[in-house]
Image 1 (cartoon, rainbow, N blue to C red):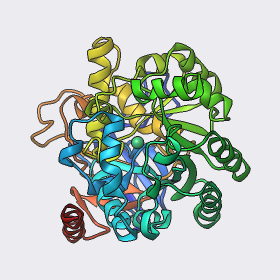
Image 2 (tube, rainbow, N blue to C red):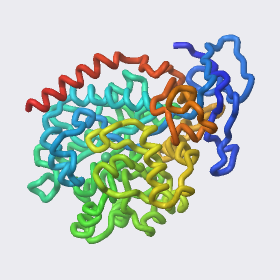
Image 3 (spheres, rainbow, N blue to C red):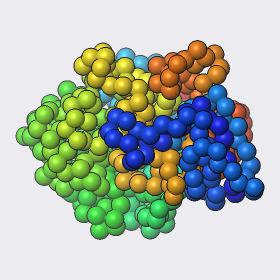
Image 4 (tube, rainbow, N blue to C red):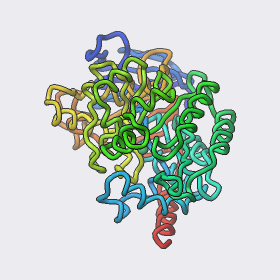
Length: 452
Ligand SMILES: [Zn+2]
């Protein structure tokens, strides 16, 4: 690995840094970025260093690496399952649970490698993952090993389900775990893998699957454990009308109230979806610093609705983007997610209600803030060298007048991606693993699941 390199003469660098006002983030035309030992040393024009390897960025737009705040990487093995193609959330889950119950460690590792490669090729340098089922000896370790192999920054969350069908929950009893075992394994993976330091490649969070698959006690105990350990907390919340109805019926309150009552609001918490938050819940999230992972393609796919991102942003809620799992998207391309998020806000609230630049901020800096990271999502001296280089001179964006073209036109695949200064994608090719052989392995595993 070259320890020092210079990205030179980019058409435009979108820095997302603090020196400009909201909505007017600093942009450098003909800019350079100097990187040493995984950290950005300088951003500006006419930079030079004797030791630096040169990365020519003429014709390119440079942004921070995108940040994905919600995923279930294991689901890349269950894309486009016929019986799940046209179901709403609860029916969709009930179709897929029996298939997922056949997974083991190898399924978890290989599906994560495929999902991570897909994300990297779409310009994503940091992702969170929410793994909430552990059949046949699968462990969170399998996903973490995959991220280490490809060289991506991972916020792995130890998910859980504890209320099976026989107790009135949604998942089959075979996929739920005892609550004491769940909490013990949370402690194990935090102690083994969580790195609280700036530049961390692996962080661990605590993440009961959803209010409809764990008990009130596990929600509360998970929050206590996470705060005791100083890690973040994540779950699904207010995803669709069924979800709200379940909350009102079972708990006698809306999801936001339920979250607040059990300690699930605060700057160390982020919730996926939040499509159905009402105005008072949006205010609660803003006041408490609670983050949202907005997953527009999954919300479209499951017919859940359009999350009120415009209102959340105006109220001061932290919002990032998530591709969600590949059984409900079924793509895991984060730049497509950003384009979709922008378009959905515009068709719902008006063409002037979500600019491409604001959405690119949400896709980078916004996601970093949701994950509690201040060392990524910005191109500035001292920040980690997570950098995406987009070729704006090829067919998808040729003829464009402005960097907004990245979301209005394309490309949908990154040219170069650096993570902690490592050249993970070069010329739209993953350098750190043999993608074709992993994909062949994945195809065999999927075939095995189809054959039953
Ligand atoms: Zn999800």
